Image: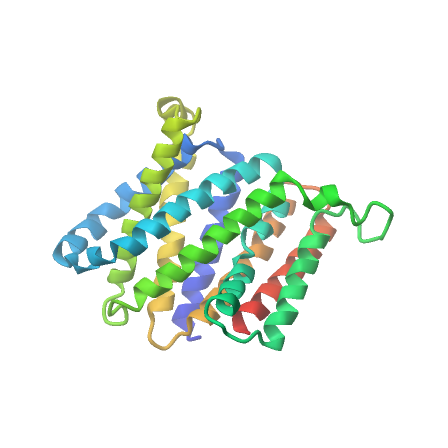
Length: 297
């Protein structure tokens, strides 16, 4: 990857880690995330809306951004519900294992061959996920215990990653329909429309659940709402723009952005003072290495 793409992906990883830490300390409700996404859309609307109005052809991709946005709202609901139950140093790596599912789609649906590197990556990622909930690296009778893995934390986080693997494929498909190399703003316009759908999905979920106290949330959590909304949209803007560059392979962007796994685990341990730091750092490094091998393989 060229220097510009590398800087874009590093910036995205830093922003993603930052807003994830804020999310861990913020109200974990659909109302909060609806308001946060809305705040982000307000920030970017003056730039994106006029461009979309002048280039309405992007609206023809509505089946893609509607489906992606809906799946993205599912991801956020499962994400904050996972953060309710677990430390960020445990939850975040599980939320980022979507390359495993992407590989499954490629093999089963597209009949692609599984390379040796990708196979080793799957083994490493699964091993990292097995290490993640352990309190020590020393094997005991309780080391491999079904309750460590057959629980709601793992189920919700892995389902969130499953959702991610689908909407990322749809987003890549959408990018092939437009000349994003000539005009990178088309990529950000697409993300803006996707986030509009996501915000709508979150609002609907908030209204049918008991997580819709928008006024109370705004008064109590104005600062994180204002910070998280623009950051969660901006981080994905940077990734899509990096992938839209003609001299950059999407696989390398996807692999490089996974550095956020290690960054977030370290931040959770050092800043949030979460326990079992050594074990989780090792697990995060193993998962990161595995995901990179899957993506590049």
